[in-house]
Image (tube, rainbow over all chains, first blue to last red; front, side, top):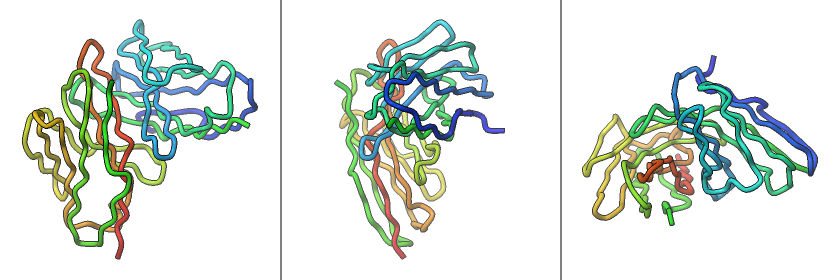
Length: 112
Length: 111
């Protein structure tokens, strides 16, 4: 099984719908991140969490919310999806400063 | 603000050496990392530099100059499988030292 698992892997949804992307990890890491990737723009940080009671906004948090249900689970929600949220979304975990970040396989989201 | 700049594309031939540069501007700094990504797959960790100098791992080396806010990834003996996107990333220090990525460099290795 993968260390970092994202579900779903692909999703097509309609404008205005609420959608949740889920991430779970077996690494035992405290730090979890959500990024979105668009062509030419790299990986942009949406939200991050350093433990269950800690939630922080990243560079592009507008239109998104997150929930850290447990150390192992970090969910990203789009309350009312819009077409410019069409992107590849990645969840990542790390064990602290200077350590390797582990990524999930990504969720390809299309908003029509 | 925070920014990391990399060239958008680099092309090289098999067996050659290529250097991918990264300059950064952040409110704080702990270290510079490099990640590789093939065709929209999961990025994977390559290297980390916290101190000035060169770190070598097989065919890949990474360099950091903290005083110049600059680093590079050096790939030697290029192989076709090295064709991928390469991202530099920094832990930006401050109260939260979050992990911020550059825009990525697409490396195309030609026969």
